[in-house]
Length: 342
Image 1 (cartoon, rainbow, N blue to C red):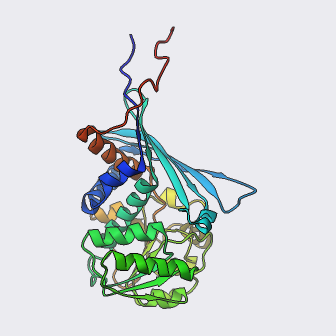
Image 2 (cartoon, rainbow, N blue to C red):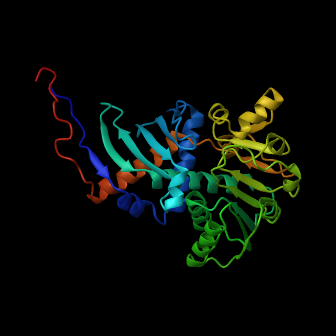
Image 3 (tube, rainbow, N blue to C red):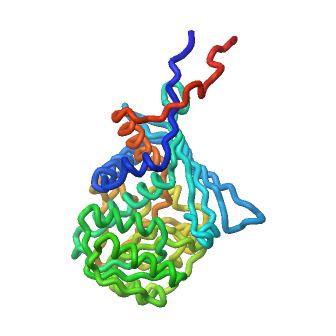
């Protein structure tokens, strides 16, 4: 007897964008639910696998396999590349696809463009962290953005879409052209904040009480804890910007401790320096569930490695919305030989 094989759909970026655009609050809820499931132990999130190239040391492709459990579970994998040289030709640095697998049969049932999925889950995670890690202190009114690429754009969009409003936005990028383009993006969105492009990171950091790092830095370039003496909340999305002594001056949260401590992240360097993980205050889930309260007398750093279960949660949402609307592009005959003995 032939098992019931799911139809296979291909979901292009135009459809992904159409589902996700303007849904910031809903997507933050989806990401928060995935964090809670991960904390409850109903997910599987193995270490990411890095494909690197001796002849292209700045480039890599990463595989993020995962399983999001529960009654409405889904398995799958994101395959995402990072080729920084793309930016020089006007192309986005990252490209990705996401495969969704049926947890009953194991058959894949969707392949979707996932650079948008990846950016959305990262930005939603950042917006969630900004909200929860800022509780108990005056709500930030000044934002600094260091690294003005796609992730910065999506994160700003999620902050704006979940109710954040800033008096001032400080920008810094190694490329003055990219910083100017980001400033133009802000104006096109109707942003009324005062926007200042700074010549270096120190001035941008000191000018803000919510700091976003979204660079492609491969090793720490911010060395001075004193730059954070005003105790900002720091969304350290790019993971490798901050020297260990900077992290050790604050309250540190990650998405998953074991995942964060790998691939030469700043938190791993801090562990190597101190010999333990005691400087980590907990995970974002610990904060969501009320087990840990972030301190207000120190800077707070959120350094998320990025969990594949978040990609699955967002990707499953995209698939369901398109299926409900009856607009999935299914590929007839994608699975061909379905009888064991022909």
